[in-house]
Length: 196
Image (cartoon, rainbow, N blue to C red; front, side):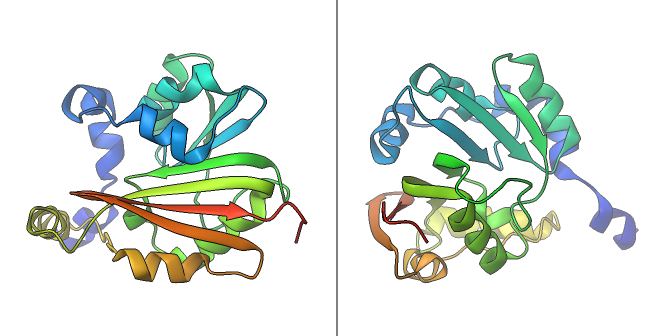
């Protein structure tokens, strides 16, 4: 029984009704923090059904929704004008400096190899580009309850405090700031325009 539950893809199961159950995000805040323009290609990592990407699509040249779940990506493809890509954040199938803008909304805690994912996100972010990671703040009691629920569901989530997330993205060619508004926080990483 435990072996079967460990292999369960929670997101494939939830894909058909995910958008009806999960509330929308603050699209305007993401637009502002990422500095989106209609010249940018956006990568939405852990983008699932494309619910965030769909809201950001009018403000960018194009959006690639990256996720591991085939079921979630099927839902994203139905929305149209989104480019679905099945892969993990730990080994992105893109050349260096491919994306001017990257968002990871409420998904980084689901990534198993977080240091590898941080390196990959910085690799594919173009010089002068920005990356925004939005996460629930594990220091909040309500988020601790969510983390407990995900642990009980065997989701293997790993929530980080803002300072720990910042450390994963620390590099000589980036500027990082944290924006907090309970129950979430945003880590905004801006890559120097000088290149790597």
